[in-house]
Length: 307
Image (tube, rainbow, N blue to C red; front, side, top):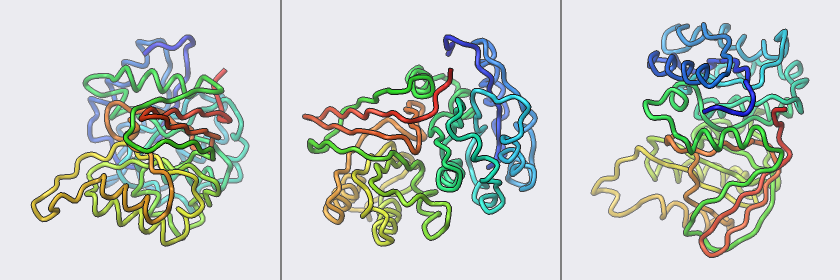
């Protein structure tokens, strides 16, 4: 858990209420025990209906990043849930644009994807799809895999992620973007979704059946988004329960259909998403993907890194 330098974490909670307060406190204890500082802790217990505060409070979490007296090292989302899309048309993208290129890691996933893609599109901010306070740093069993990949991504100007896949050999390069598939699909037709030209789309989700996953990918295909991609990388898709009615229809069938429809390489099995083991990926960075005899290597650069 310890990095070479003590870091300042600034918490934000733009989405759902943190119902697992014990996990959040456990995450803070781990971070502080490792020598880090954690500020803005009041957002953990803040609540309005199902949200981590009313819309104005959660919006202020984000807009205030442009005027903090001291720039933190890491802006960390407490948890996902639902709520970020309610804020997108009121975010001060012009003010937040000043954060682009600064040594700042804005990190989260799940519902936070909507905000991350809006910041990339409107402010040019490269943020990190990775662990959050409650579900990851506050998990009952902390994942060494997740922690290692987190620090690697936010401190190294160039880094690699490697994994095994059943996908065919390929080599492509492009701009890495994506995150939670449900949130990406929800932004189709809005000003918050990146155009994704020459993109390398990485996706993950939880509790989404294969047919729903295929439906969202068809939405991206039929709206012209997949036609602008160079490759698709699939992370973890867990929590779905198949039934007799599916008659064998599963995620491999989805990936094969998307390959056939688009002609794109679909590279599977990256540890990325809602599972305890997850890599951290900078959304908006440049990436080169190589697959050779079942071994995938994703080389990434061009993202902000901590000093």
